[in-house]
Image (cartoon, rainbow, N blue to C red; front, side):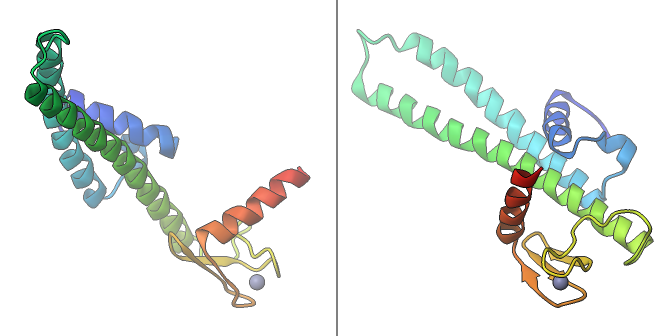
Length: 161
Ligand SMILES: [Zn+2]
């Protein structure tokens, strides 16, 4: 895929979360489309940011007309909202990629491979099927967990290590 500066920034952010190179690992077309759309949003946001910075320099506090100042302030706040939205989307894309990769490895080696299971049931030690980000079900005892449930269990486990 074509890589401009903005795409690179997005890819770097996503890779920080996935911990692997997207190019080498192979990522679904859908996720590349999200990355490309996100790069477009980032490009626009950074262009606007540059303009707002120039405006901010021109609006001296002494000469500040209240209307112009409050418009600038609103814009800067909205810009921050957009930027943090972009970084959140990077996290979300990384989560989707990781999720896809877990699903794919499950499909290749169903249930009991000799290796370790990503999620096992804290109650019966059975293998857990990941139904969605937030829905895990034990194949053996049928207990269900949300992401938060499971994370709390992991947190408890951490204390024992
Ligand atoms: Zn179980």
